[in-house]
Length: 558
Image (cartoon, rainbow, N blue to C red; front, side):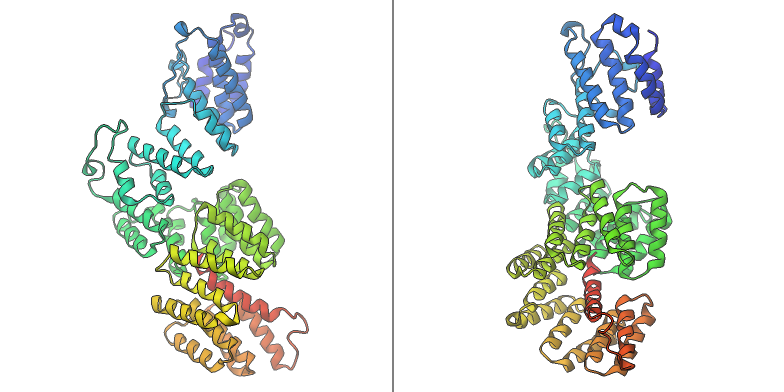
């Protein structure tokens, strides 16, 4: 043979895929191969070339090449083919190990075709390719689980995830997937105490003697069922055992951001970056938190760092969109859309896109984005976005239905109760109900300033300015928060108590000099104090200030 096959295998082992691809072209076009006309030899060489193309991310070419290999496999006489149809682990791929090139594993080739389709987001084609493979390896089962989940076949996804755990109980992505699909901790744990043959059981003590894996399962189930307090307690217990675990710290930060513990979440993300400065996982969530705090200096540095690590990741495009929001909303929206094109299952991309569309007064389009996020995995951010989108284009009935759905999904969430109150507050006949929901939210979570501010707004709508001021001042004694100062300033400015308004705007800016609502409000106030009509330059300034304040309160959950 003009080109020795084992040389391609050597190049593949050393990751020299460019050279392997070029040498593969020589190999498949060799006159020796053509002259021998051996289907087995042609299949082997095509698989080698296909592997090189796969690693080069030339998936279309890889699929075409692998299918040519299977075509030649079909022509090999069965009694002398040496073809194996049993599955092998990818770690022992025939194409990489030169010593096993004599036996062609058709199941492995089909798996590579399916993996190429998966990389191209061609889910149906990938499933169709894998259906002919009856005995599946661990890697094949995890791929099948992802394919079925992406297609909306949740029952099938659950079955494949469980099969993964029977083969190896430490497939953490299977545990997370099962939790998100509604499996209980008991169901998940029972899956990995069974052997893959299902005929015998192994003791949990053998698999998880210190019970950390069980705690991890319980924590993920708590997150999926919105039992965030329990999740934080379990993650805290795990962090005592694994104190600098980047994955656990990131999971904890995500939960803290959801329940509005923004300062704690920011500190947690900072710790993650101090341990591993090159991690990208959930760094777009961190970017959202920095934007909410108006900490544009740290946000700018974060985005710069992420771009230098990998500018192709969906998280980076979401972080870019957040950074560009105040500079150029159209550019920000385009970055959010690009994040979705990069990864159509990246939830923060849809959330950010929906928020931008709401700000651009395109609530119908925003509702579509939030619904897409909801279909992937429901959380309070997508519920909030849907409710506010529906209210923005007069769909009060749909807004109320969605808010009640959030309340039923998260019965112990003050923010879900507040969301129902927001819908009722939208109509004059529902304000008494809104008041009850806001008060219930405050009883459930006394420190939830978003509900306190919403209740103050309700007092203002009904002309009870004194009640609004008393409520806000009472909360200000216990929580020196910038949003309370901004709301009080707005109330005083509306009642022409300009000096008091000035004092509270200045207090807000002392807490956070970058607070956009305070800066805009102070600018309007200075015009009023000079006798200039603040609406003469921009009649929407006051509304913008209130919107920013509302967004700050709602974004606690991001």
